[in-house]
Length: 243
Image (cartoon, rainbow, N blue to C red; front, side):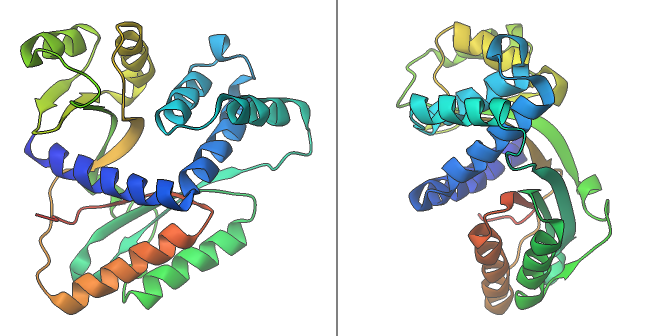
């Protein structure tokens, strides 16, 4: 489990920054559109939509905003049609970077992503060039501030709900699932009254790479900042060891 907590911290910080800029609402809004178009507007019959709604609530998105997004995606045939696009490449010192985007203009997104890599002295690679270094997993983060529980009892609840792994950190718990079991595990924990700070299917590095060169770190941060500035970019994963 050693690598997972670092990843949780990295992702946690990124999403907090996104929330400050209001970007997380844009990200979730597009995910609602995709979920509705793929599985329909009724959460009872659409587990992906249930997952997105849970994420929206965890990020304090107002209920009326969620409902408006669902209705718009369901009722407007001309609503934005987003495509999922993934880019892979290398940052300075060979840091692996995966970029997940939802876009209505692939040419614009590709140009933005390529520019971000180039300006940070990195390079876009071919599909699959770095994704083999990551594991796709469901990840649930539960803040100890929000949930007081006996760690052993909580671990048993998570494992009984179908989780693959459980870890306790100083201020949060982390639960890892098979991606195909993520929705079922999340719903069982939700039914048990567990509040979740984050819950998503994500990419977890198998190994982390340390970078000590200040120039390389600045260039990597430049790439990450430019990717964050793109409305099309949903998530960015790296194997940088930030400890």
